[in-house]
Image (cartoon, rainbow over the protein chains, first blue to last red):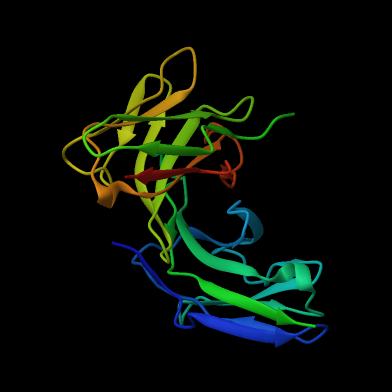
Length: 119
Length: 116
């Protein structure tokens, strides 16, 4: 079974600074997807960024980027130029690839990291 | 272009009552997933459905919980004889058929279930 581990229950950052959130995972699959979701106090689940395991290039979305280390099974999220609106719970998630004739999109989530942004 | 719609947003039940949570997927999405989030925890997969079919219910408790996604209408997560431990946020997510590009799941805003 796949597992996702976020070892930092809480992190804090000063506004405009950079912060990195850690995530490790365990899987025997070779093809899969990794995601970071943001959950603000409103409880919405907002997709921040996704990474395909077969791609060596790290995904970026504006101020958000990942450091994907497939051999180490590590998938960290870097937030640059942090803003007050970035304060939220962040979840790392794993999903098997849908190839091979199976249609299976179940997400496995980590425990989450609460990010506080100080003005 | 409405997103995933869940209702009610909040649901209060007394112990022993039934809870029904509804989820309407995004237009064009035929796959629905239910997740449960206990306080201070991450989301845990419960069940994966396609229209009129349960594909994977490995995360569903063996008793009292059931889910359906009929040909017409929303997906329903039903909890019978609720207990205090059922208090949680229940999220629904949807995605398009897999035949296309692998698509990320789009989440609803969740239903917070409180058991008195």
